[in-house]
Image (cartoon, rainbow, N blue to C red; front, side):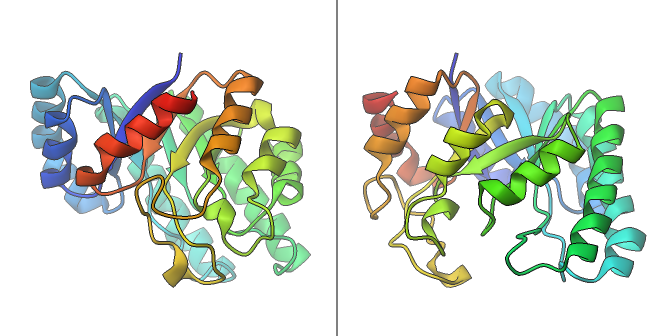
Length: 245
């Protein structure tokens, strides 16, 4: 069964997603100190709205600074995954940029090693770790899946529209569909930079959601979808999702 929830960056947004009646919120699990302080409040919100959480982990910083990634980012992610278990979170999305078109092979090899360590640790916390696509296409992700069989993917359809002639979601669904465990939806006008990642309501941009969602349904996707739009844009985004899947 497909389950649709909303993205929530703050406590206030978790309340908004909860009031809209969605079954889950994908929340920021990014600062170990703040998350530890907020655990009691987050548990209360889960109970009051009868919802559950998915985790959205922080950006990595400089994607080529292997020393910082090994000494700081990796331990931080492990701590955040452990806190996720305290909140009964069983699926989390992380960013780890490894686009083989622009990343040195030695960097990719080192990051695969770190990612494998994170996936193993996540399994001890009963959490499925999903790597989100940024600029990378399916052939880059195939390398990670071959090296780390238990790694899964968050397919971000909005990101797929950037830096690509055709939305990369088509390539992911055709080549690594079995690894897709979560989906992000939001719209944009295309483009080649971070500023073009607009996170508009579905239908307010140019992403071909009718065709993409039809293929997702045809492939038999049966997991979670997060609406990565403002809470006020979620009801009409959900209408688009319901229309096609």
